Figure 1: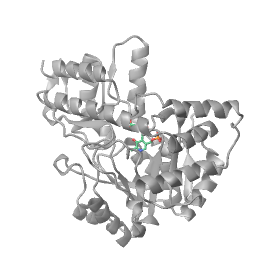
Figure 2: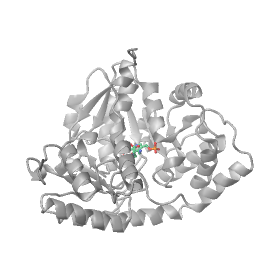
Figure 3: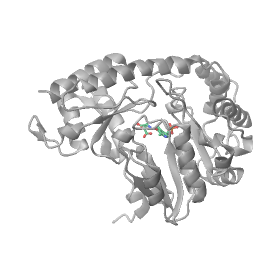
Figure 4: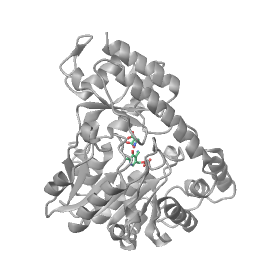
Length: 396
Ligand code: PMP
Ligand code: GLU
């Protein structure tokens, strides 16, 4: 029988970041000595106070369905966090809790887009934005940026990209994969254009706590005039090393939250109840572990940037946020390594994996083929040994 499947889902590519990360894990489990710079997740365990809260919630039977939009107590903790850290005043009716920031993004796009609406995405962009927009019926419109501009779009280019179909723009600061952090002034410039053109801003702030060299995170929704058309996306994955717990939230105008609530009540219901209780502790409890993890990332960041710039043919800028380095591979294109031609970022990543047993993510996954992404959310020893392997191979 010929299976007549959905055209929409058949056009969706799998997440390259998740695919390569799990391929590297599988090779390792099969005894191959792979060093992986692929995963976008902290390598630390979740802090013990959060673990303990999850265990208590199971023992105390706090394991039932909650409201589809999440526990009121967690929404209050999120409101406190948003006021304290981001200077944005929301009430619980403005908050919706989902299975990670990823589902918050999907829910949000479904709530604001009609078929064919355009959403502006700045490249290099996080791999899932493109497909999430497509799944929600929208059309991703990509703005290219340059490394020498810190991968930030100019106001002129943004204005030229807007059409009468433009509905929203995704702003991701600190950025995955570039580590770029937007300043308050830059965000205001983008916010003004959004207001003039009646656009939503989807502000993905999931890396806000991972920021270095004195850079400051600024939330565009903290300025009143941008608040109603901004959807703030955040979650527990990166700051509290809780990727597998699947807990994220969106804060927005209550009319948007109402639509998402209805949608979520039919699709997934509430996010995992145990993770919700644990997240209350994460947000209200001791925050010192965040700084410990941030400091560790910072040390690795500095080491990785210097070590990469020490390899002939590769270069990178020092990112100000998140835990990724975008490595410029332009000089590698057109060369051959051990008889294998390098014509794309994927070719280069394949050679690194096959010949040096090092896993990285091709820039093509992020809409730019002249780079590969390396995550420094792995141990110092892995970074040192992995980069040494790359150096030996590339300079061979
Ligand atoms: N946004 C960005 C920019 C990310 O890198 C990630 C990481 N997967 C997410 C959203 C989603 O995070 P999660 O679903 O784990 O909360
Ligand atoms: N955000 C992480 C990354 O970019 C995790 C993987 C994913 O969700 O795509 O690698």
